Image (cartoon, rainbow over all chains, first blue to last red; front, side, top):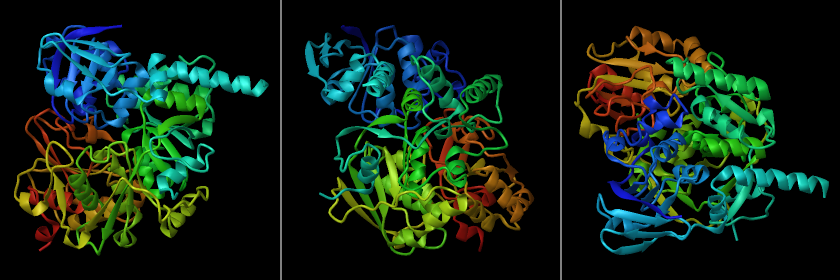
Length: 171
Length: 420
């Protein structure tokens, strides 16, 4: 699977209040949440972006609250992946758990300019900058996490764990 | 090789004799926690899991605290859905009037003991480290998984040891220690790590100070913020009717990613200026900056000791006519004790508004949302852009003495100046 889109750049320490302000968190409806994605970082973001576009951010993306509606709003808005120098840990877990592709790559963040055409292969972590003819390699995930990512999120893993227990009970 | 406090708790919860930083484990959880805000999504995810049942209804706890008493129809619908789920599955449920802010509430109900793992779909679950419990923030899908499995996957974190020396000056408390620490580390300085708070200063501080410090570990990016449980912890847990728990301590040869020492005797009251908790300055540098609102309480400084601190400054005074102040006790119990001690009289007579326990304004929910350009001194834990309201409003984080003094002065002020 290759993800394609334009890059939208953001700075350091983009917190979850900026990604989805709490005033919009009184719903779990992805469509509603998508309307306000990145609103307090860039109020025009959802108007400007097209499905498939990527968020490219500096260090500590998604810091602050544990609200899972933050990655949900990004995914529902049609953002295909988030590339950052680093992710705050709860956002990191949440993105993997709900199947939003995230990649850690400092070189990509420093090299990509806003509006660059980007192609990403999440399985291999390859990031291609079509505009500049450059390729960057994201940090690989530990094997344990890659298994969750390969299943598309946490719930299939949970079902496997539950099934293992039933098997063990009758073994 | 020796283990840190965090490693010992994790090892005890995954049936291993030892664990090492970087290792992935499935850890048994003692409590799975959610608010209505995270709970609604956890319910939706939980119901997608084939054949899922709640692993132990007593250990799955929902606390309605963020937008409650319901601030609008959508919030009311979310709370209603949580209430129905709780009834259906028999889980432990705390509703309006029987609740408080989850991290104040659970310890006082005796539900948290030293050595526990608390997996909470709220980033400030790290607060429970004040009792020597490994509290850690997770998302809603994580919570759904933990509700079904009774365990969560964790990467064993490295630990960073923070050592505090000396006697703090009057008006300096846990809030100032943690603000100074976050300023030193930066908002991602302890990312993925366990913070371990130690040093002789901590023996001189009360549990409420420890509470405030552990609460803000997440503001340095940490997975948890731990204090080794001691005699003070034991007394608190016994009074609350909790289980005995496990009194782990780090081994002398435990490995740390870093050790940082702080001379607390040089500390003065600190304040974090917009828009990051790491932007910390001495209060004296900002003295005189006009403010519109003060909020005292919520989870970070919502214990009885914090309300006493605010009342010490406000007793017999009126807040500045241009300023409004909102006092938010952390729980119904704290509220009642404050009432019995006469603290609520002090607040009302000082022209403060006193609210039922709620996270409310901290995250711009209700009970004190800011208008464009307004400036607030708050005892809460975050001052991100737009956190308490309109995107141009500003939040300054401080301890309850400073917040109360600023309410009286109408501008950022030191308590020593106001009480002169």
